[in-house]
Length: 380
Image (cartoon, rainbow, N blue to C red; front, side, top):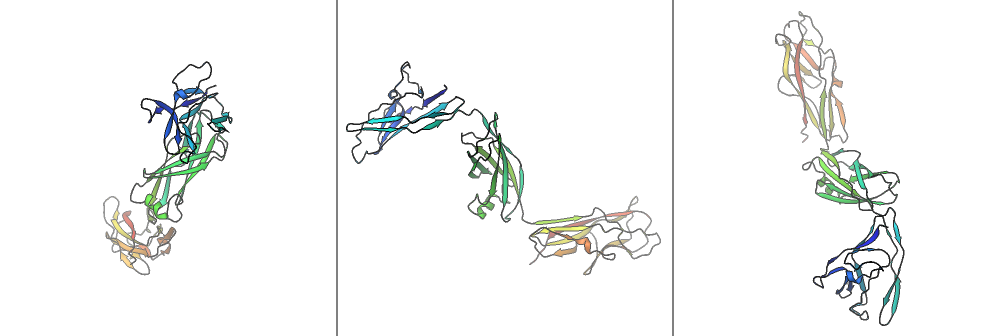
């Protein structure tokens, strides 16, 4: 049997130069030391100052230095420093054992408590994050990030339902939180979910002070798990990016083409061959859409510019486009959900982008570059 008691020695504060394995503490705060020599040995065991002894038939004999018959010392605590070491592959149940206290006016009997010496766990607890990156919109309602972790033992062991797991959560090496979770299954792996939301924090403002836009973004969450046998897992890391609680994006066709014309054509306006598209996506953000000519229409091969200009026409405006941004559309609404506005849906044959011809143009293919830009709208 590889199960024994290992008494821990410490320097005695009461008797310099002596080692003690425990002490008797009286109600008035004074102490009697329990020395290694106070532990009796069974027959055949050599006298030694070693603190390792078998768990069977050990007695500690010590006479109290004070009487327990006055108001100051009615209660006495006996404390022993030590650990029960079990290197067997099974638990050992230590039954209750009688204990006797002999005094000048009475003999008192009681018993020690029953306890279990669990065998040494010679495996490690492994943790693996099942996802890694998350996104939060700053100050969104009911922020809810759940971090999934898979636990396993190496070498392989089964988990015991009901066993408690202690989860240590460290956010940006600043906010440290502990949470408790119970094992639910009895498989060789256990999946747990760690909710990171405002229920962990004192208030919503405390949550967003931690998950801020300005510092430590993206935020790093480190988690370790400790099981009931004090096995600590490896460190698992997750990253949370906090983005503004608004969206403002513009998307446009890579190209828009106009109808073919003959060299002798004197048409003032050349309409689109295809509409293409221009789309604005917004959330919590009024906007203004502008466009400008980055490169004028130029014929391939000889860099001859088109005789004419691009126009933008709708019910409210008729604008010649040049290299300065021209306001095309605006929306002063702040939508709580992502909203798409298809600008090109309102274009008709004679509205939207139109090409105006001001002279004769040689045959060829003319190309240019148009830039669309989106900005916050001033709604004041």
